[in-house]
Length: 270
Figure 1 (cartoon, rainbow, N blue to C red):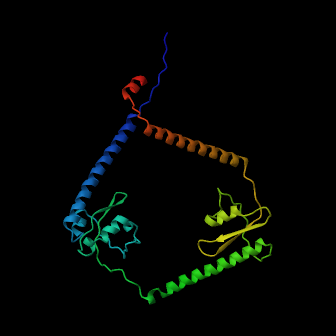
Figure 2: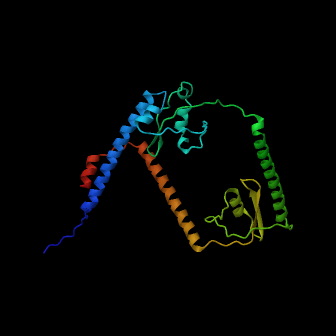
Figure 3: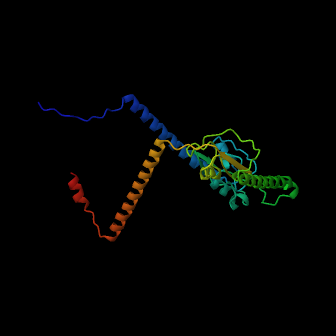
């Protein structure tokens, strides 16, 4: 008796298919309705360009007033769209007092705006910004002094001079788990000469000041970490080799007159 092995695919249940079809139909219907409303909204905003009220009343929308907006952005996340800001500060909107074009700001949200009040860019009076400038300069100067003192302390520590410093609790730092250290600070940790412990390192803090680091113990990487690095290196070499081979083959194709006879390939596959 002959026997056969069969490969079969089990179909989805009728209820599952029904639910999916209903969902697809609802999405299609919602998408069509959104397109219709978007077109109506766009037409009303353009045709009644001296007011947003007709569009708001026809589509039962609420007109919202914003705080002051600049070319660089707004406190209102909805208005932080570069295309919308460009439209709002266009001559048509600012000088001619017309509605902006309708802008898609993402998440199926359309926005049109008009300028209620406009103030040209101007220099603020010193009385307004004096305290702010003074505070900023003070912070910058304090950061410079702290960095200078930090570099001096680091030099003394490296020379073996004792310093009465209150160190924080020790942390085990690795490249995979930086314990909050980043950038130049983390780089200095792994650049430090740890031939003699404790070793010291330091770097300027991006937030201002200087970070001093004391290295008291160094642990060798685990065997599995070494294996992972080796495997990663081999994979990178393989990928680079493949890219070079692909580039070489591509250059040969450019130089050679190669014709692909598709009909013969298809016959061979059959």
